[in-house]
Every structure is written in structure tokens, then in C-alpha cells.
Length: 309
Image (cartoon, rainbow, N blue to C red):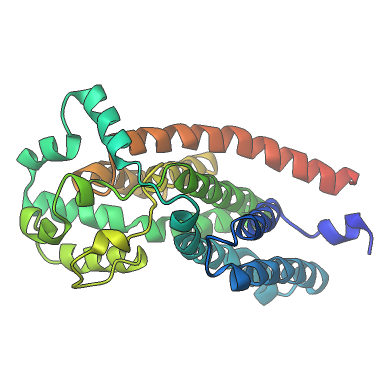
């Protein structure tokens, strides 16, 4: 099989996912003395790469609706599984937390710790609204993906999906560079969060759901030792802005709903003590880089597929 035939069925999101899987496999090999699970993470990434090639070629050859759907929506599973792989890699590779640095930047910018300052405005109803907004993060990608596909079919979906997936992988690189746990562990007492920042009906179960996703075990005395180092940059901010950008760029019906949810989400990142303000600023800047560089990569890959390798 020629290089052109091998790569031609891949869309831009396939390409960046394969590239990131290969990067993680290489990183596991380089740091195998530190990453205790490297021996199965490397073949898992290799298997993921093979699966993407197989799926892309199968969808291109048979063009059945089911294969076309699976070929696009596997990306949601891929970014979740990759996020959990980072849990096994980040701390062993870079075992230093940089919360002190991030706190000092926030204090330099504002003269106070923003999460502590915001505590004076806390109210159960406000907490409930912002927790709901923050938790909507997990639905944003599905909403915008369905809406873009309905209006623009697969070409528009592939471009929007690439922007989102590419943004995820860029944010993951930040976790390796500056691991941190966030203000709910450093500036506040994590175990007292439900007492200090109570909601109404859904806040506590939503917090528990998010904690489980970040590998925080319930009812242990040292949760900071287990939480995923995923604070800098704020992927919630970066990816939410990518979503709303795609919603307005592709003019989908849900764009104003998404904009409203994302406004609550970004405010909630600091109010709910998940992030420092510098995380949010870095996430916004990374959003700009994601969109700027993302369109260049899309144009380059579409040219390669049309003209040849």
C-alpha cells in the first residue's frame, strides 16, 4: 500500500489523534523507568493507532451510515481515554506541583487570591447555577457536533471535530509542563467544600461526578495525592471557547444556548475553586492559538489529500 492510499482516508481529527497517540507511546518509552504502566500503555496506543487506520479505511470503502458515524464519534471516547492515560503519566514524569507559582501570579495580578475574594459573593442559588453550567462541559461537544453535522454534513463536522480534538491535545501538553491541583486543594480545604460553598439540589452529586472523573477517591484523608494534575491551562475555558467559536462559525441553531452555558462555565471555573485565574487566561490564549493554527492544519491536510503526498 502506498503512502497516499494509507493516509488518504484520514480526516484531520484522525491525523492529530494518531500523532498524539504516537507521542504518548514515545513518551512512555523514554520515561519507562518512571511510568510503571508503560509496558501496556505503549501497546494500547499502538492498538489505538491501528484501530483508527482500520476504521477510516473501512468507512471510506463501505460508506455505511454506521461506519461513518463510528468513524467520527470515536473521537469522544479517544479524548476521554487519553485524559485517563495522562493520569498514569503526568505525575511520574513531572512529580512537582506548580500551584505556588500559579497562586503567586494571581496575587501579582489582583493583589488577592481570587477564589477567596469571590467567597464573599457566594450563595447556594448562585453556586447551583454555576455548578450546573460547569458540568454542562461534558455535553457541549455532543450538542455542537450534532448541530454542525445536521447543517453542514460530514465536511463541516470533520472541521469542527478537529478543532475540538486538537484543542484537547494541546491542553494535555500543558499538564505535563506545569502540573497543578487547583485552589480547592491549596487555598481551601477540599473536604469542607460542600459546607463552605453549598448548593441546592444538584451541586453535591455533580461535584462527586466530577471528582470521580478526576480519580479523586471518596472518603479518603489525602485526596490531593490522587487527583489528576489537570489545572494549567484551563481546558474547560479553552475547549468551551472552541465550542462556541465553532457554533458561531458554522451558524448552528444552538449557538446562543452554548454561549450562555459557556459564560456560566468560565465564571464557575474560579468561583467553584477548580482553577486559578491565570489558568483561565492561559486557556483563553490557548483557544486563540488553537483556532489560528487549527485552520492552517486543516487547509494543509485537505490540500495533501487532494493533490497528493
